[in-house]
Length: 441
Image 1 (cartoon, rainbow, N blue to C red):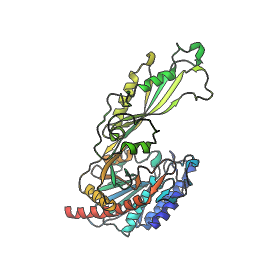
Image 2: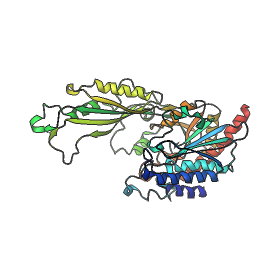
Image 3: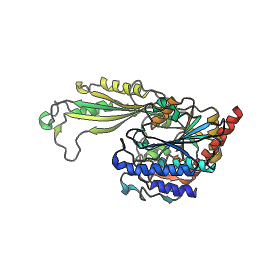
């Protein structure tokens, strides 16, 4: 672990911020991170490297360690890019300087997900670079802004993904000390809603009260998406109870930083609201700012919506349901222009079979507790794409973060104890999987 800490500090110091299209100003840092990861993996025993050079993206690291004859193969996935630091004044310590305090390491990319790359490095190193399973690698540099490996790539190029088990090291535990496997991911869909009512804005004193205000029309339509409890009022969206481990109300309040005295919206369990139920968030509205706003009836208004979708419902089907609902709205007799954006389907993993038993046993040994099944409301379209491209592979969304890691926010942090347990668990998993394969032969 001391060596891994030094290596994490070196990775965090590289501001490998990705942007769509791999523009020139991002390349030096991303290529530096790419080379640093290759060097770490080579030191851990990987000798055979290749690289996927896909248009408009940082290079994807691929490589392999051949396994013993007849041994199963494990694909190790992660990503070396990060999101921007945001407002640096909100950080307690510099975002691109790994800083350890009170059992945690702070810095952008510590939890999401450079420490998870080092989980792979540590597990391979623990076996002296010769684990009892075959290893394939897939470490990319554009996950944060839209992976080029999504959208059917695994189905078109299954040779890069074919394995008995896939460890997607971009996750972690529901809470510190509780080993968790993410088995469910919500899907994602975008929608734009637009209203045009007048040729131009008009004086609110002369025309207000009779001229249709586009912003008011839009707000009325958006308000129709939810009922009085905060549940969605859109027909055709799938929702069911979540049966796995979940947050307590108190944990969720702390995680979401809900202001004192305000409710958690909606009905049902927290899990059913954020994991196996849909949600609609208004991401943005085009309208005048309060400061400097003119006294005018608005002629045009537009909003961007994000729909999160039940893991086993088609994201396009859910998108169509929301669009249909909005198209049926006629606030004050005014129709809405509704346009479909991008979609990404969710994912629901199986939780049985030799690989699942191997992972559960390895994690139980590492953490000293039975594994629980959790979900995430965020979409990882690559996981769904992998499941379609290599349907026989067991896919594990696994890692060393926990729910309070504050990924993408200020003071992102990694708990050292969770990190060590994740390295230990992956190390043990290789043996557990290999042993079960021998028994089955």
